[in-house]
Image (cartoon, rainbow, N blue to C red; front, side, top):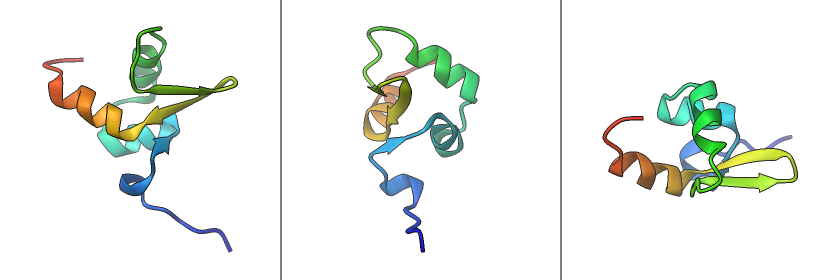
Length: 65
């Protein structure tokens, strides 16, 4: 039996989870996180994870994306 953790309690999210969490499309998140200076992306080999708290901070400061 797998344990289901709500998105708002997870530390790191996949692109699909991050898209559902913040309402930004997967392709837009992928484009934003491709930048070398992106503070909210965590690479696990070739797997891209989004740091939820850092993404929240980034979006709170952003005027537009």
